[in-house]
Length: 180
Image (cartoon, rainbow, N blue to C red; front, side, top):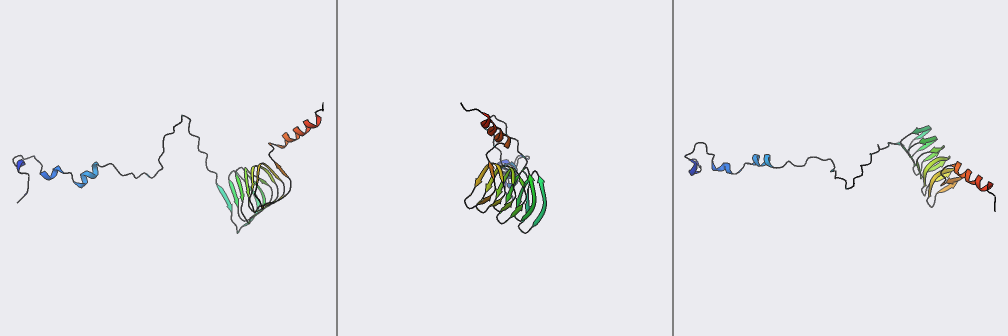
């Protein structure tokens, strides 16, 4: 015995009453898809200014704590020294000298952060930070210098001057200006 809607028995192309409720597969097909995109959402900017161009991230090179290297470092990335390095460091990025590390040589970098021992000169840096465990034996030349209590410095410090030519011309002008 079959159960059908009795009112539709006279019509050949009528569907059974069960077809009025959609099946699970039909409900799944009509449902909105689940969010499977794991990329971060971007929101529209409120100002009319263009977005700044993303600068490529500079790579960092590491000299591990158990390494001793002698040579020369040059490049555009960042350098972090945790071991011992003997030689000059000339990078367009940042230099970090970790606690317990030792560097014998001159330094040219954008930003220099020292927690270890530097025996040599910082010849050019926009910013130098001496942490509480830093030991510097040599001259420092920087745009900005931050010194933590406990750090040690033995040498000449030239800080805050744009370049040495400006300092010399200001001194020369002061010497040649007659007093009234």
